[in-house]
Length: 203
Image: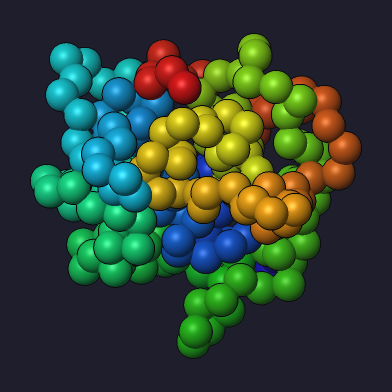
């Protein structure tokens, strides 16, 4: 298929198409946190958590598994993005996306149709007005589509301590360097292609 827009996409795939590998790894970290598998460590870093059971009806994505494996030692997001196993997982992610016509050869950047599809998803699923009533999959999709703005709304303490977002500016500067991409507020009905998640770490 030419534009690939009929292909059901997972949140980490949407993040990759919209904002690149760093955004995809961020979604994978949030997925692990919601499953109780990752927690904040020293400021700006995260580590594996001790969990009795994995939350969620679906297994973690291969990218999330690679991130979990890399967190044998505490690490920050920048380190994770450069980790060889995580870079390999991102490369493997690109293969079916390229086959679906969403990435162009040879550099495997998103095609115009893929970027348009992500923009349409942002419009259909604006940033929620609050955290209440959202499933874990809703939260993942919000982070995939709205990035830092969604992290500040949905997982502020973890995101700040783990280094997923920057500290708020002071001295009259805006609190957010990037305004939310979604238009309007309201709790969006975040149903797309995933099942409901289990109860992970609360923020």
